[in-house]
Amino acid sequence: MEFLDVVRRRKTTNGPFRPDPVSREHQRLLMEVAGRAPSQLNSQPWRFVIVEERDTIEKIARISGDSMTEAMSNGTFFERYKPYFRFSAEEMAEKRSGMLFDKLPAVLRPFTKQVFTPRGQKLMNGLRVPQTLGEENRKLVAGSPLLLGVMLDRSEYRPGELSSFYSVFSMGAAMENVWLSTVELGMGIQFVSFPMEVPGKWAEIESLLQVPDELELMAVYRLGYLPSDQVRPAIDWSSHERKKPSQYVFRGTCASPETGWDETPPVP
Image 1 (cartoon, rainbow, N blue to C red):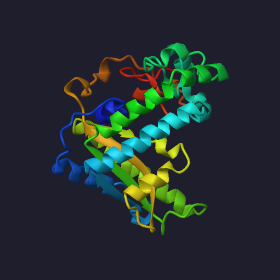
Image 2 (spheres, one colour; image 1 turned 30 degrees about the vertical axis):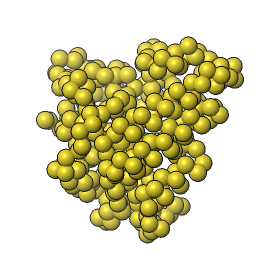
Image 3 (cartoon, rainbow, N blue to C red; image 1 turned 90 degrees about the vertical axis):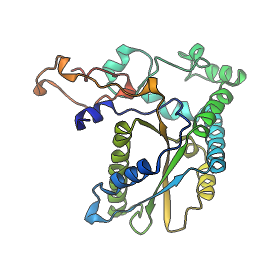
């Protein structure tokens, strides 16, 4: 597969994976590409833990689901991320960032226009929407054949110092290598983020993974093979009419598939 095709087909997987275990060969490959990422002075500050043990995955899934329910119930999720929600293609085209909510979960569709209001929050809580979404999240994480924890060496990751920036930047490069490689392998990947939204929940995961004191757990991802009907098709980008590069004005990050531009390049 051509490299640019891999980049253009990269997505976040919001749906379930196949139950098949991730092969040892693919696990080794993902760790290899992570280790080949650039890092300041070749410091390689990252450390990884691969989780396949079902009981641990189930426990992390429960923490993630409970966290989502709590963050949705108390309104902190919507309040924190409302600048990134888009409710129409027109708004998406104007902002060129964020997430297009054109395929909301069924339980949220009646609240599309009210999701940021006290009345909408009260209605959702009354209908137990946060609990429903939390349970769906739990099932997604629990159904993952593999979790990947990413840690940083505290001797390199020292918040407030320049080394901290270098460490986080390097970790991002390592995870981008992993993310892009999943496209080649027919796999999907998603950040398990909700435990970071609720105080105390992240510490529970650190305890489960027995993260040593000298390391800082930075992120957890779920990975697995995509169902055959979700494997990303190749895109013939040559068929798309493009303007000269000088006619494009990019603000921040270019639109990606998650933002609604599935098969077309960003528009000026």
